[in-house]
Length: 381
Image (tube, rainbow, N blue to C red):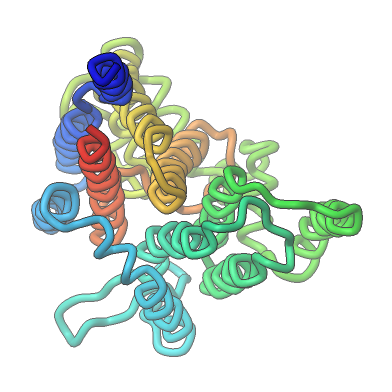
């Protein structure tokens, strides 16, 4: 009898045993490949920013390895609320003392030698904040709207503070990330909640258009419908981007051979429209490679979320994957002229220290979650 029970327990343990995870290796490969392609494209787009971007990539790579392979995931969880609070205060300080560039007030100076953009880093802290909130309430299987008031207020306040910088693109992105995480939490809606939601959905665009959007933001939306209404003004960016992408053909014009880029027709070629540079020089085939790399990265992130054993790891993996996916999607849609120009960076490609470090930290946290999942799996054996 004892032998029979031992045999059954052994069989069950083997069924629980997971195969070794390759998700960390997949994320590492995509991280290296996309970082190299991003640096190559930036060198062609604008060499002025290349040296500083190399420093950002080196620092980001260090953070990726440290977060992904050395530091325990629970360390970041323990700092989730504190970090998010500090970054929110930093956002408020930006409105009072922030550095202004390109008509937007988004940066804080660190002494006289560096500056950082809190709205980039708060993307990650928002993900951790929301995941940790539900982890601390893990005894509940269903939540009412009144029980998640802190999460909702956080989303509203962060949205408003960033919106008034002004940075509508990042504000909307953060709201979408929070909604993506909430979609995996069981929330009980009453009839009044549903009515209020639909009323907000209908009135927000109208109120935003009438009272909050600035004239240039309205022009960007109008140009989405008809870029040729002002081809030399507000519609110039989108039209030149489409010309660059279309002129790349199947194989592209070759590295450093893009005419739209090197004849300075393409605006913001090192940031918002860097994918247009890549498309012109490497063509449809090169774009296909980049799309595949991003798709593999997103699939690995969702697979890590699926295998996560607790709500913190699951919601964090979902939020980080949503952040990377939405930034990629919005930027590509923007350069293709099917989304308003909102100043959204392309992960791993666009120049910028804060955005590069945020992407590296996000990829590192996905590896850390996978590492934690594997340790939990071994503990079951």
